[in-house]
Length: 229
Image (cartoon, rainbow, N blue to C red):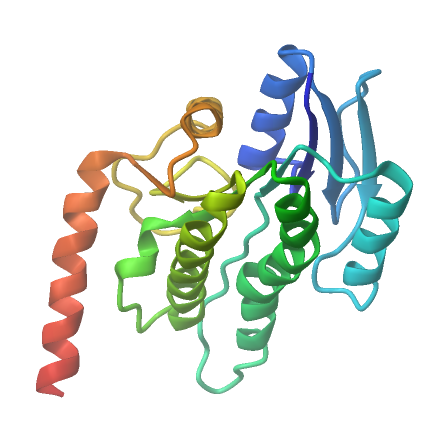
């Protein structure tokens, strides 16, 4: 069985994915800002905030003590509305959604490439195509994350290292706080898609397909607004 690191797995998609992989007999190391509700002989948990100063050093320490994992899954994400009179959370969204994911890749991809085996799945969003005046940080970080992961994926596949940009629409988690949530899926269904992506190892995995049509329409509406303003 494989050894997994799963970041952001104390709730939501990360928790559902952890439970599903434990059910398959894998060894899981969870890393999350909050304590884990999981108690399992194949599971150990570390409380770690990806926005903390200790984040990078703790990942490196974990690598030294546990060794390089077979698979890494980054499920961390945050949403915060943009308040023009007090834009104090914008940079934090960039740290959590984008910078911390890149820092993780900096740590795990080089030794995976040297070993010539490894897999990393990063949770992004179909919002990476949207112009979002109400939440520019979220959409922008997902856009940057998607382009970076997919570009790096093309670079490292020849080393037998597989990176997947996992793009969801609305999932029933605390992150999905929009007033309307078309085509929302459950966390368990989202976890099944994660496991499917882990098996297939595509560069990009997007779901649900119906949401992609809506997002593409919103993308072009945003481009029109930018052009005419």
